[in-house]
Length: 390
Image (cartoon, rainbow, N blue to C red; front, top):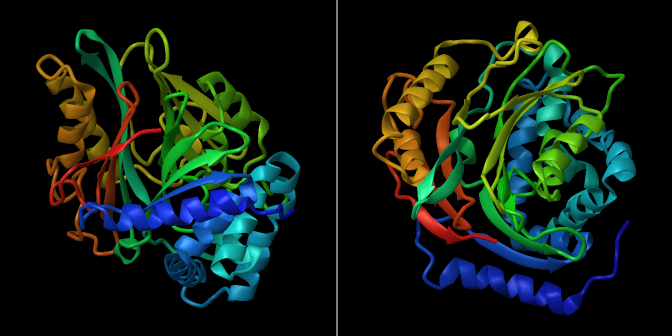
């Protein structure tokens, strides 16, 4: 699995970490890593650069997934290791990159697989869990015009446990095989929210379904599928890749692309048994944490509580109200994601009313102008910081 390390690329990628961390980078921005080379090179660079954060993320998930000590760490790592064979068969480069992260951070392959498969391991152990807080997000694909031409912005707030406030890092990767990409991840992951050189981006919403966690169906972890999506050159290729991949857990992938011609967006609601596409058909798309497609809605177990329903309604209303006067979809996305409307269940969340969940980052992918905008915390409390694209 391991490959020889391109030492020149590796040294240059580690140097890039220091540049990003020190040279003019605002204190409220997440650290960035630039790395190039083969899958093992990319993983090794991340593992060495962010070893402390990766270990902290591992400790969090070992504790969180244990269900207050009901499940020992050895069992969780055994479940995580079970995803290696399917990755080795379908996405060997992804498995090799995860192995590189493990070697760089001084961890086992199973430990880093646990970080990348935390959603899927959760699905496998969910049968013995009580009701508890789960990741929540508000995602948008907004159309508009910039300088008189069609434009699109793909954006979301990532809401999760405040204990992970220091977990995110930005990866700028130039694989020797596949497109260059930029992605915001929890340190140790090889993919999450981001876009590639083909101006193809993906957002993520947590979902759960009655079909999740079947022990006879070990599939590709959700966050590995996100990376596989960013390895594609078209939305059609992403849809085909997701449909062809076995899956253990549900998720929602909101996708958009702007190359030549009109921007395009599509929403994929994913369960272990079905992938349901919701096309944009020329309109804006909004998604939160409940299934919308009639084929999957009846099996939704992530619920239709006040948070997901209020955030959905607020985002749709604001996007529509702003459209006639704010042509630039990036500006509209900033306003929507900063909204505190609908308290106590706003789009931009702090620890009130749920101290176990807060907006850890706002992300806007300007696919038209090749830019990334981030907030290091809730957008209503932190500024949008512009980063280069791919």
